[in-house]
Length: 266
Image (cartoon, rainbow, N blue to C red; front, top):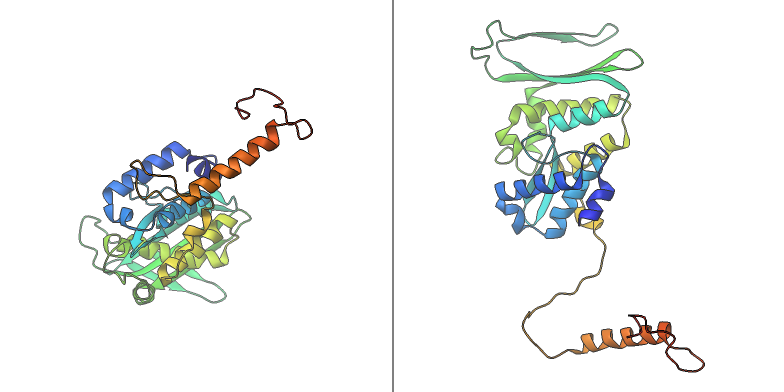
């Protein structure tokens, strides 16, 4: 399906690179091969369309098996990358606030946010208590949002994995940052790619089928026995169609003579 991947990828990615990345992910997560192949390939195409690399190396997005389906989970770095690519945002960042940090914020006519990490970064800063994201816009101004640990955990509890497996378990802080960035997107000038990424991510969280299989269109024949066998009725029907096609294109309809010795006539 390399041609389909090429058609979906943006300029900064190549089909060869995407193929290598996906093969690596399949080796790391063998359960992906137990899923519907159309769903797996569909998730790869979805990642290609929004220009994000699957896997933990970049942290852009993840291919997560859920039963027989593969869901595309957008990571924190993927959200940030899409926001920067929109051309409307100078910078965007998200941070976790830990129990030992100094942190305060207020809304209203003069919104304000202050965060001072613990003095010694090597010391235990405690558990995370807030997550926030800040975006600076090209036209001037700043947009930011804050979520408490309770709000983030409520989002996590409504996902399929509920923190028992997947990135919520292995990368909780990163998923918390992504959650607040995703909410901040509602206040930002977003691109189609960003809208698609948020939509896919929300469907994955809610356990809704991302309809990845819908991107594949084509015809195929299933061969049950690769050994020698007598042609069946379907095979004969295909041969008849081919004979008719050859006659249409290679025989003079008036004289019945062969027009040429072209390969299709033979």
